[in-house]
Image 1 (cartoon, rainbow, N blue to C red):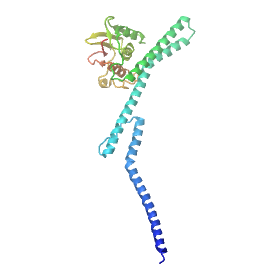
Image 2: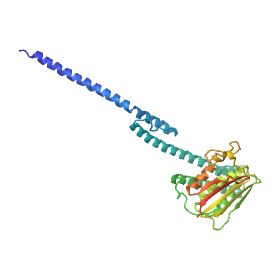
Image 3: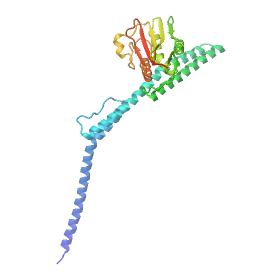
Length: 307
């Protein structure tokens, strides 16, 4: 018998099987890709959303409610990363604002000294005095940068940020002398010269007290008083002025960064001095507070560990 038809049928069935297998593999690949893509679509969406939120430091978060277990765990991990990124951005903005606030005064002294020197020909003694002012302001700027950068590196909760002991009275007198008060304004320093030491570095003590002094000079009517006394286990510094005092409605926001009682009072402060003083004091185990019972005027209290 002729077997050619059978052979042709076998070849046709083999070719058909191969074609059917190829089609089934292609369909399986397409369906698998589609299923995996649909399964990973929420992950891609969450990743893109987290990228957008991290770029602007948004406070929006994914949460873990009403989510499958896998997506809930992913959302929790992304939320933790976003919290850390936002903290880093907030610290960066805070450091930038504090540097800008603290460097403004020495920069102003340099500009004023140069303007005064260029106003007309000066003698050699006047030129030397101008150079001394500029050098002192530049050194102050360097100290400010070192202090704030060291504090940023160590962290606000590290009580070893500024180890050492500093005589309080000389620092307070130096700060009072370096002020540029208005006419008819008297600055009084009442601090014993002997046996009164704070357990912080001199540069950090200056950075804590300077904003309080500048604030007192800005708002005082005629007198600013700076006093220091020994407390059990610590030192207290009082900065008092006879100005209008802190408005009662502003007390809750007094130490909030960027907040000012009267933005239209004519000075260019950014509302960072008091928060900076409190943060630096707390970094070494101290505190800066306002005495609401003192009238008239305002009194700020600086409590620091003893040296």
